[in-house]
Length: 53
Image 1 (cartoon, one colour):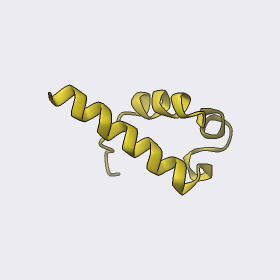
Image 2 (tube, rainbow, N blue to C red):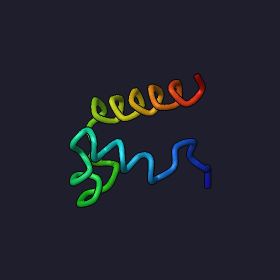
Image 3 (cartoon, one colour):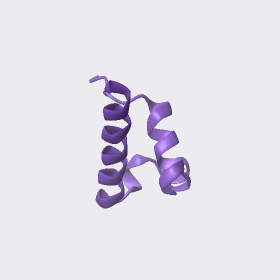
Image 4 (cartoon, rainbow, N blue to C red):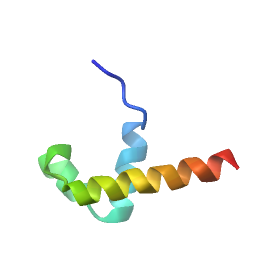
């Protein structure tokens, strides 16, 4: 099994912030739209960039 780059905790925190956590919790990540997944990745990149500086 391939290990993900983002921790589940971080993904859940971002999903909560973007308002899609209920979908994740009830239906799984496969039910999250591509657009919302893109927003999650974008937010994770912003967080990573802030931590680098």
